[in-house]
Image (cartoon, rainbow, N blue to C red):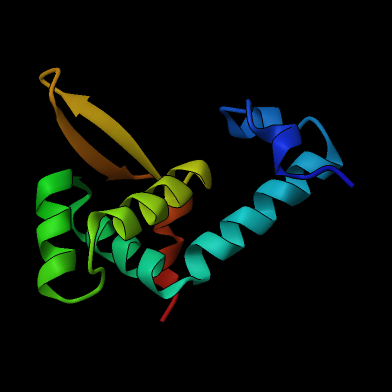
Length: 111
């Protein structure tokens, strides 16, 4: 059974879809992404805004005591990006924004 290192260079859903193992790996990652409480809160916030700057997202998460430090934020946001739930966008060459993807919109149906 392949592990995450077999898929570390995959960048698109299509690459994962080329094999049953890749599809299963991506599906497992996706389920872990949307079912984790911190990541689900991040998805809810990004989904409501549709696009939000990293600074604004961090402020909301800190103010609501969802995350305590930027390391926890970075880990969870990276996980959501790798699960294709959100994407990062660099605006004006220097400001990072996060945008919800179609896969991330599943949060609208989770309560």
